[in-house]
Image (tube, rainbow, N blue to C red; front, side, top):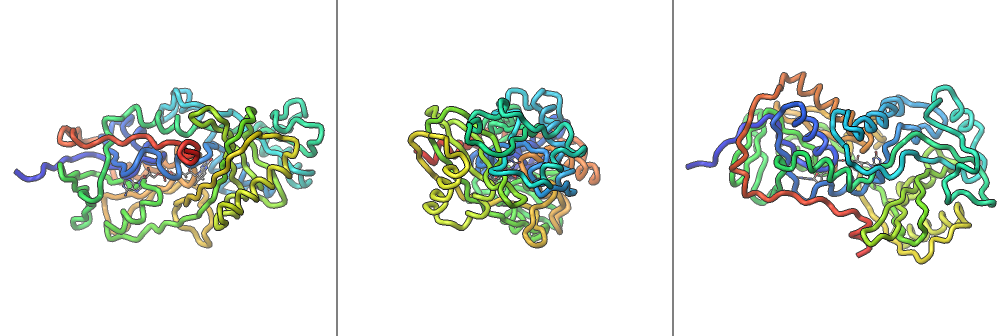
Amino acid sequence: MGTPTLYTDIVIIGGGVAGLWALNLLRERGYSAVLFEQEALGSHQTIGSQGMIHGGIKYALGGALTPGSQVIAAMPSLWRECLAGRGPVNLRGCEVLSDAFHVWSSGSLSARINSFFASKLLRGRVEALKPDAYPTPLRHPDFRGHVYRLEELVLDVPSLVSNLAKRHSGDMFCIDWDTASLQRVKRRARLVLPEVVLEPECLLLAAGCGNQALMEALDSASPAMQRRPLQQVLVKHSYAQPLFAHCLGNRPSPRLTITSHRCSDGHPVWYLGGDLATAGAGESPERLVDHARGELAELLPWLDLGECEWRTLTLDRAEHAQAGLMRPDTAFVGPVAGVDNALVAWPTKLTLTPRLGELLESQLQERSILPRHTPDLSPLAQVPRPALAAPYWDTLFQ
Ligand SMILES: Cc1cc2nc3c(=O)[nH]c(=O)nc-3n(C[C@H](O)[C@H](O)[C@H](O)COP(=O)(O)OP(=O)(O)OC[C@H]3O[C@@H](n4cnc5c(N)ncnc54)[C@H](O)[C@@H]3O)c2cc1C
């Protein structure tokens, strides 16, 4: 007897936020969908992200709204709907670390940014705070500058991943590419496993940095992918107060972005990004840690974090390629060139994942792919299920 063939509406490769979101969305819409992950769910960018669900104001710190910042503006309210169980994907139960983000200036904000923050465009999205409303780490007589509150969210990403993973856990499997392969037969892609051949109406490549190799396996190089590296800094300490804030320097992007998390042993961790991480991508970890230490000492000199342990984390952001390695304005979902039933997706930002979902639905509609198959997954019964990725603030400090 030969290997059985399973006809399914959707096969998703990759279980980061893009693949997990797509699985939840499409299963809710009635499609049959099966997801394959080669490591753990949420590995790499998703579990490495700071969890900020921002509305694009961060991209407008130069003092103007760009087309990109307008696309992203709707995202925090969409996520809030999902968190309340009313959105296209049910995120009820996902932990929110903070329901606001702060922006502070190390000195006086430029007049341009001050008037931009006060402008009609941002009404309801940015609030100038009085000192008694500052987050605790910024409340000090020596603090000089302004603090603004942004109506943005910070999610606990491990909790986001476990919530996205739990509702359709029966549709997720491990994949071992030593024994599995993607094949292109004429202009159609299929997934060949030792147990079964999967023939999907749509193969969705949602594997972050892994998408490039998957497209190569299908003999396609388009759409092209770009990688933009970051080196984040993590500091484990014993100062209990959290901070979720961007510090503005002289550039249009945040000089330093701080989010606060907890290790499984209960210790607080501040996760540091912003210019520190983008400009420091090629630095040695030792030099970057020195720089990060210097930034905290200069920007928050009154803070005593207690005994600190430092680590750095280098990750690539995988995105649809842009001229000059620019950040794409929005999420991307597009056809894999030369393959009629394959799409490739990059969310660009965690924040933009709901937009990825919308784009995916439009692509399926354009191709007239409707819920059709009800596959019997019993041939996959012995295939192991993927675990959840552990947060970097646990694995790096072991
Ligand atoms: C340090 C950092 C901080 C960030 N912070 C934020 C933030 O605060 N807010 C925000 O909006 N965005 C943020 N981002 C961006 C955001 O994290 C990413 O846009 C998003 O997580 C990308 O998700 P993804 O599912 O496309 O890719 P990934 O999260 O990288 O997931 C890809 C998955 O596919 C799997 N995979 C890879 N190859 C294969 C294969 N061949 N077969 C099977 N599985 C495979 C991987 O193991 C992984 O599980 C940050 C990014 C980084 C790097």
